[in-house]
Length: 103
Image 1 (tube, rainbow, N blue to C red):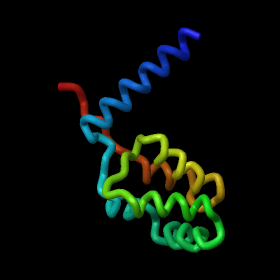
Image 2: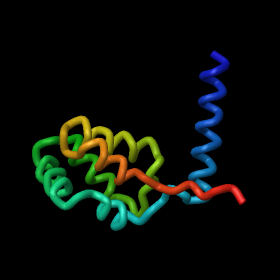
Image 3: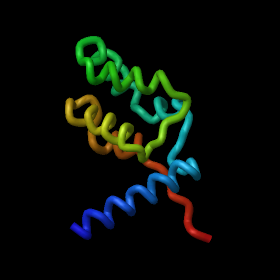
């Protein structure tokens, strides 16, 4: 539909803008510090028996920066919520970033 086409186009432009400006990019160390300590401990423990959680941690270990608004990031954090390792409120804090105002 036209609406879907427009939405897809908007998402491509927004993703391109975020990629080029780095507005949602933070160092991995800063990303990990956003997780509450007990939640991170639970995530690390879950990785021993849950291959999806292990894959999420492997992806984090493989990069130097994290794009908070990227689909991979939001889906990974969403998975952690879905299996009870994070609350939605904690996930919102982990993924939060400020979009600068237009001058």
